[in-house]
Amino acid sequence: MRLQKPESLKVVEILYKRMPFNSALAEEYFVVRKGYEGERKFYDLTSQKGFPMIVLHDVLLKKSGTAQIDFIVIMATRIYLFEIKNFEGTIHHKGDDFIKNNYKLDRNPLNRAKNDFDILDGILRANRVRIPAEWKLVFINGNFTLYGHQPEVPILLLPQLEEFFEKMAKTSAPLTNYHYKIAHLIRNSRPESNLYKSDYKYDYESLEKGIWCDKCEPTKMINKHRYLKCSGCSKTEPKIDGVERSIAEFKLLFPGKKLTARILKDWCGNMIGETFSRCVIKEMDRKNNS
Ligand SMILES: [Zn+2]
Image (tube, rainbow, N blue to C red; front, side, top):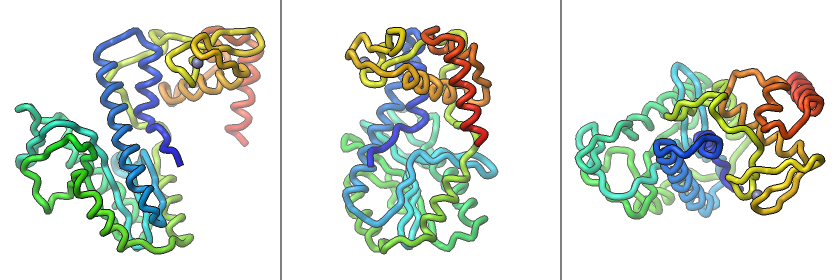
């Protein structure tokens, strides 16, 4: 299985291509993409072990608070929560603080992982799940040093991962229907809309409209009347494919905002007509209501 992009990355990618260059947004894009590369590395290393397990990625949870969890791994006798950080360089862990170049990190990753775990644990307990759960904050980058690391704190550095996999192997056994029910329960505990809020403020009016190529972003598709063609890689596609991609982008950026035929036509850079736009919206409503 290929790891899907998390919602946070999708949101920033859409903003990045639909907004004029902005250094704060570029920085956010870089940070989020780097985080995803770390998650992919962790996922590849874990998958290689071949344990019977259910891996849930980029899990959003809601219960007396909200959580965004990088990975929940369900194994036969243990449930693991992993928060992945792809930091490079040197960080000092002193008391409750993480300090880099004499500056305290804004968001304490350990506290965040602990909060996320408490929310997951609350959901598992409320549903009387009998399998114990534990959590780890994983620093996945090989060019990372952590000073002040206390062994009792649930942190794993890259060189410690292999040893931890050996521990995980001991909780491994064939999965049953019960484990899939737990996965289902966790998936169903997500909030209705995405939680990720970009640090960068945006509004509908200021974003560039159009349909972008999904192969060589950020190149726009050109309207060829009956189909769309990319000016970069020459890919062609039926109009509906590009429109569906644009609808998905709209929903991610503006959860809760009603998409009308007029807005859809505008959002696609007027590359579709009124009638086509109305048909797409009608079909979308029909699917949503069935
Ligand atoms: Zn292209």
